[in-house]
Amino acid sequence: LAGYTPSVATLACNAATLTPATFTCNANPCVIPTVEKSSGNGCKGVSGKTVESGKVCDTMCKAGYTPSVKRLNCLAETLTPATFVCNPDPCPIPFDKNQEASGCIGVKKNGATVIE
Image 1 (tube, rainbow, N blue to C red):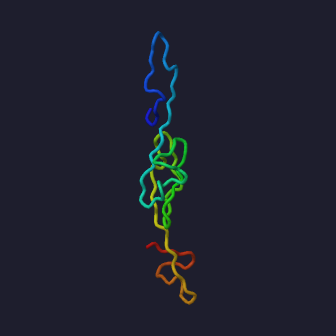
Image 2: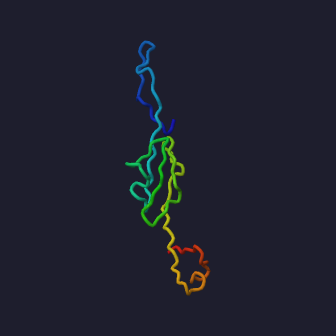
């Protein structure tokens, strides 16, 4: 089955006896995607280049950037979603007590931001 690796490569049969007697199918880890502006490998608390199957990648970006999704889930070599992007954080609009509205045409004052 795709995304899984057997615990042993082969089973030998001799006089109706298998050696080893059994095996398991182990879920493969997921490769962490390379993301521009990610911090470290892009996954908080994960070392290396892979995430174990059944675990999550809590995404992280460099200062001044925010991940497009908070978490990638790994199951048998498949990340869901498959990747993320690091979006630039908005810059605050400077405000002076004597200016009208935000000081920018078409931008409201309350909590307004402009992305450069």
